Picture 1: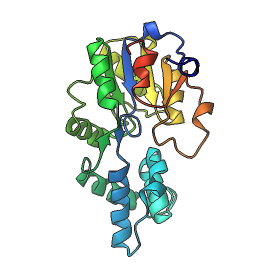
Picture 2: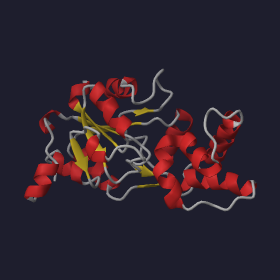
Picture 3: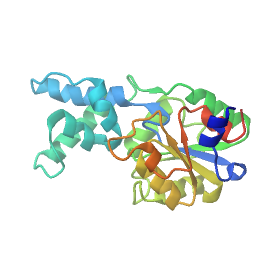
Picture 4: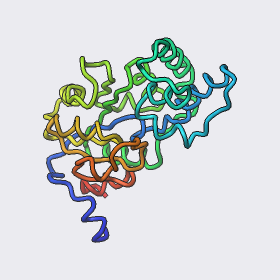
Length: 233
């Protein structure tokens, strides 16, 4: 490992990690094509041309709000927003895993964790209605120690409750977990839960602060780097 890589990937307590918890969209899976597809279906039905994936991709982390804002220039305070949100989510559900795939190196990462005897799970703000069938379709659900959605607990991220519930289901203490996510709220939630945190710089990242300013313990440029961080590669 190079000196630069060693400096960038220094984790406070790698030996304490027994479980890795991941965000889903933008961290484990690239769901942007299906989310953008649902948004563009709505534009097509309204006589509007499709938007390029590159335009919609950074907004995936904001869910329906982000997609509808970009595709139809509509915000949650608009009187038609809830009806359009329902339409968007129904359309997305029909194409949930049509073009969504695991990011490169994710399979390698998960196999490496399994081989080392480390557990892993998923904590997402995606509602269980979507999170459970999507993780099932992509072969993640059976091996995961926990799959916690945005409506599994009374709170969604950046509240720590979903992460604490995932640790409980996995049978581990929060301080023995690291949470990996591609949005600042993931890092806020992980720190609030008493977990070590890693920012997934290959993800969607949003349009807010740069990833270096999120306060994560480490910033990973690729999934496989986590194996190096944990001394598994």
